[in-house]
Length: 383
Image 1 (cartoon, rainbow, N blue to C red):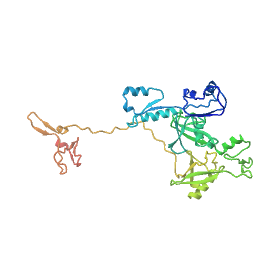
Image 2: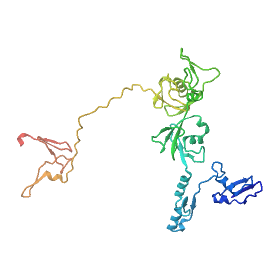
Image 3: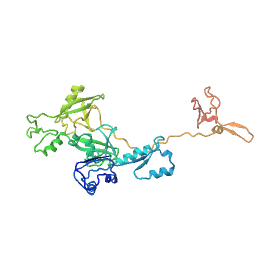
Image 4: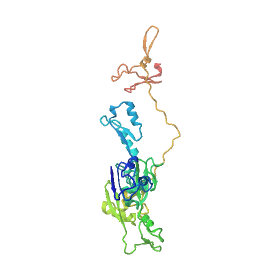
């Protein structure tokens, strides 16, 4: 389909658009503002950089292959940019979908929040036509939101594009299909350093609070309020509550708010963050606590001592005796002589609970029944 707008009369050549068909142009809209020849028109089409044309990828799909023989299907399938399918029989539909992903070079990138599982339901689809037309971390972050690029610090990437899982990557790292990405933002102190450069003097991390070197007291500049950040606290019973503290606050300030919200005294609280126990005199920024971080509340363990060292035994353990089952073992209790006389070698237990068939064990000085524990001592004069 062609839309031609001719402004001036043409006297140098034909007014057809046949050169467009030879260049495989299927859809175009152009206007002719000068009396140019057909050669000038072709030069404009073939000029690189300023050419008005744009080539799109094409894939030829042949349906109803169930009505053809094997040789005809193979001939169509071997043609370039061609796929054979059968909608009624459901043949090669998965191959068509895979070929579309391959030709368009689509890559699915899954996002992950800190401390949570990745979201595999809504991936970010990267193509060569969206964003900055790259498969980098910068393009994926920009598709989420443009403002995230200003707060971007690094990204943790899981997948086939990295050697270790996870691996810290920058904006220029190229992602592969089905990679998982977690964005790490800049802290308040890092934002200030990025905007104003390295500061002179001593400041508290997370803000522009100056520290007096003589008294070690924080001085807040006049006319500027301390920025507050929101934290989540996981209680002992599993409930989660939110508290708001200043960015330059200490762990003791958080413990006071936890005491008001959850009723746990400050002296009994033990705050855990990042696998480490926080001390009351430490600052939140120095411990790596950021906006929307989660702190875990535990109680102090009384009487907890040092873990006892496991003993090492050099002497091997005694092997437990295993009873062997011998078939027809009862034949050892009888003896048959040459006259076919059967003699019983062991004594049967006369107790009423045992009866015939239960033999007593013979020791050097006694007979013993293992079932009823009946024992007969053997006197020397009886031998």
